[in-house]
Length: 149
Image (cartoon, rainbow, N blue to C red):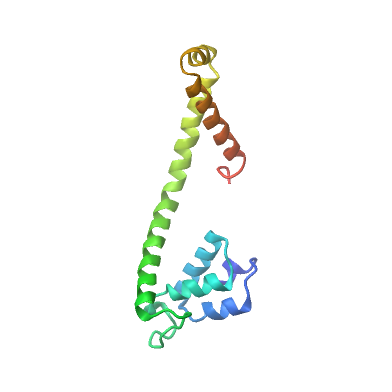
């Protein structure tokens, strides 16, 4: 956990909250903090609230997070588990999605650079041509920043 959060600005109190969780949950929470780029005490406490009792160092001791009832905490745990599952699925498909986007935009860029196609689209479908140019421009901007990262 220290390796993951060592170069981040995390308060000592947040580490105290993390120590209430078992090591594997600490790593999960640290990864969630990094993915969300949120190292606040409120976020760490919310993640503690979403942690299953079995993942706490002292599972027999009930966790106290604000004024949440046990039913609300159980619901929060279930919803957090579903969000984590969805996040992992998105994370797994992200690389393939970006690759498909780059390939498709390259093809569209090639079409839009063809003079005959541009002439045809200009006379018959100018709105389509402008939208295709917007798409190509947006993807090439992303490649310079977020997609290449």
